[in-house]
Image (cartoon, helix red, strand yellow):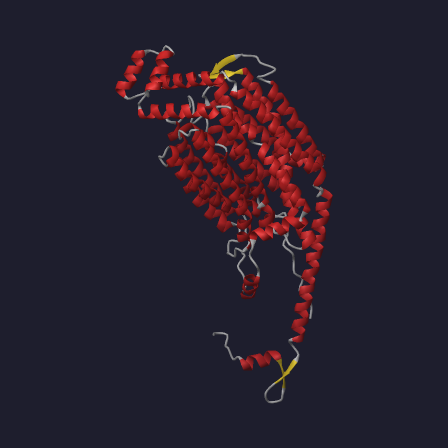
Length: 587
């Protein structure tokens, strides 16, 4: 009997709509992640009146939840692997994750609690946020290698997905601070302004992920009856499965450590710049935005031109380049405002600027380019670990392997949060932000404490304006800003901002250099090796397919053998089956 040739699915044929639908999903997703991951501590310190003990407890809560969330990633990855749905194994969790996550985010910013009451609520809400975001995060990134195994197309998808995700995170980082703190704030209340921004970002998150859900391609994972029996026989121990994959896959171990170090150091300066700016240059969110815009836009350069870079440089050379560029940027950043100062001040559209700050922001360009280049190489590296696993052990394990990326991101971020919060407490920065929270709450309520009144009088503020504020219940922005400036002048005497800047830069440089050196020396999946693995896998799978066809052909030939009937006659098996099971076509 002639064999029927089974054609393997072609790769590299995704339409522009499919590519864009997938990559655009990262815009709103990273906006929402930035809102919590990068902005939540600032929100808490500026609005929830947390003393050092409360802040320490909140930090411990965040660290524990992030570590738990990181360990939950491989569990989620395994759940995805066992998901059988007509829309595939990724999309159901992607949609469920975004819908539940936006509800949790809104509750964190909307609940009107303060002090210890908020701390208790935050413990449950933050844990729930991590669980729901993981549903979306693991399914979104695990979908990437399943879309294509063509090197050129996968590199392009990875680059554009990272680019648009970075754009989303950058936009959130750029607009949240100026629209919540300072002259451009949406409302006079910092807390209310944050709530409005949370609503806008959650809407973007939901919209972008719905676009991915309906626009990106998928393959049904519904099982046959026989496959369901085999599925039940398989043991489902995700953490054990993750450990086995990490244990056997040496390249995945390297990437995991590199990502861990990178995620502690890469965003440390960006997060700390909010407090450094407020301490050194005043409570003006637009300054933070300027730094964020330069940092974010420059970070897009390696992603936009990664294809061109990859034609000229190997991945190892790009890792080396990223380390040199990052070190250069951090070195310049530490010098400006310390060893080199201009003390030139000016105003643009009513916003006070400082030339030293602008120069520091420009130094951030080199830092962002270097780190972004390394991140792109790491993301492609972990994607290639899937083929490495398939080549050596015959299993792709996309969900399990890609769970390493958010696992290391969350554990690394937990360490980063602990380090920065400890610095905020030791350097007295939390005392300053706690005062800001008290002033903002008093201005919102239209009441001034006796301590605030005394502070204003001692600074020579107009007593008549203070009395008018007490009688009318309306605290003007002038009074609020005066109180803030007085507190800032008092805390700035100890130079906590300068100390924060230097310590953060030293730690970040050490971590980025460590991750680059490890990636350069220990990660061995080069472009050539990847191509060889893909070719070998295709040949192996093609041979298996031919073997299956051969077995099917032999079975078909055997099925035409003659089978004795009850009457002793020899009949064709097909005739025998019809006699034994007289089912009509209509039935």
